[in-house]
Length: 301
Image 1 (spheres, one colour):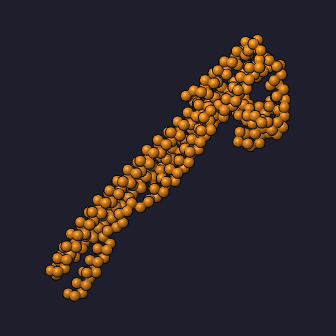
Image 2: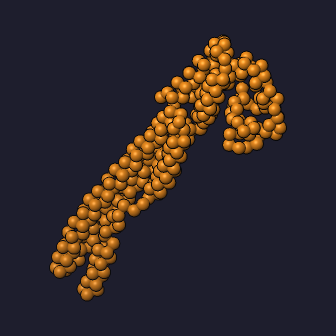
Image 3: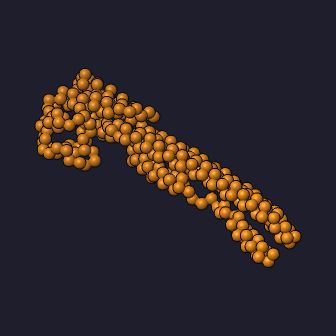
C-alpha cells in the first residue's frame, strides 16, 4: 500500500511538471526567412529612392522610380501586416490552449487528490491515462498551430523575394532608358546652345526646324508623367541624328571631325571595352547602346 502511494505521488509530480509546454510564440524558421527577405527588400527600395532623388531634375525618371519604390513599400507593408496578423493569431491560439491546459490540470489535481485520499488506485490509474492523453492532445494542437504559422510566414517570405526580384527586373529593364533620358537632357542643352549661336537662316532651315521640334519633344518627354520602356533609347538615337544633321549643315564638319578622333571606349560603369578607336570603328564593333567615349556619354547606333 505504501509503495503504491509513493508511485502515485511520483507519477503525479511528473505529470504536473510536464503538463504545460512553452506557449511563447518563439521565432520560427519562417520568421528568419521573412526577416532576411524583408531587410533585402527595404535595402533595394532605399537604393531606388536614392536614385530617384539623383534624377529629380528629370521628372519622368523621378516619377517612374518613385512609383517603383512606392509599389515596393506598399507590397512589403501588406506582407508585413499579414505576418503580424498570423503572429497575433498564434499568440491567441497559444493563450487559449494554455487556459485549456490549466483547467484540465486543475481538474486532474482535484480528482487525483480525491482518489489518492480514498485509496482508489484503479480510478487513479485511469485518471492518469486520461490526463496523459489530454496532454498529448494539447501538445499536438500546439505543434499544429506553430506549423501553420510557420508555413504562413514562409509563404510571405517567398512573396517578399518575388517582390525583390520583380523590383530588380523592373529597374534593370529600364536602366538603359534612364541613362538615355540623362543623355537626352544634356543633349538638349547642347542643341539649344547650337541653336542660340545659329543664324536665323540656319534656324529656319529644314535641319534647324527639325532640331527645334526634337528639343521641344524631348523636353516634353523628360518633364512628363509617363515612362515607356525603350522610348527614351529610341528618342536619344533620333535626337543625336538631328543634332548631327544640323551640325553638318551649319559647320560642314562637326561630327565628321569628331568621328575621326581616337579615344578609349568604356561602359557607363567604367569598364574599358576598346582602346584608341574612332567613334565609327566603335560603332562597327560594339552593339547599340550608351558608352563613354573620351569624356562624354555617347549613343552608338
